[in-house]
Length: 127
Image 1 (cartoon, rainbow, N blue to C red):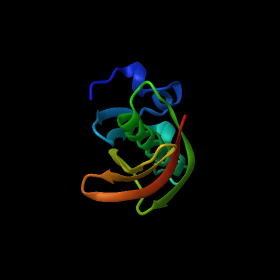
Image 2 (image 1 turned 90 degrees about the horizontal axis):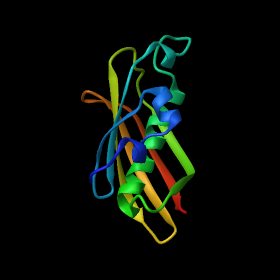
Image 3 (image 1 turned 60 degrees about the vertical axis):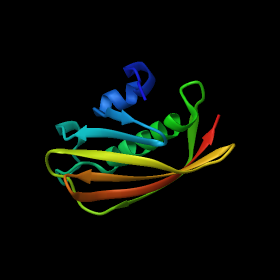
Image 4 (image 1 turned 90 degrees about the vertical axis):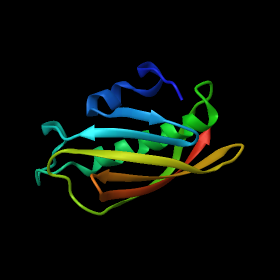
């Protein structure tokens, strides 16, 4: 799916440094490089930054399902953090599991190389 920066980014995603990589049929991929402003007191990537990457990428997967002429909003989202990120970048891959008339269920993996950093699932409303 072809997309423009205006269609896939927001002021918030730009502030964090999230970069959309691809959109397909019910799937999306985005990356987040480590930057000093993303570190927590333990000097690893803040869980909120990882959660934001996951939520934004799942939202993009919803968009790839219903198109840019509709919007979606997060109703609920759950995440499991599995390992810290001290350096480098993480990539989130999201896929729509169920696309109903009013809601979508999406899952996502946040990876650093071949290591699973976090796993999440969310429910989104079609607006």
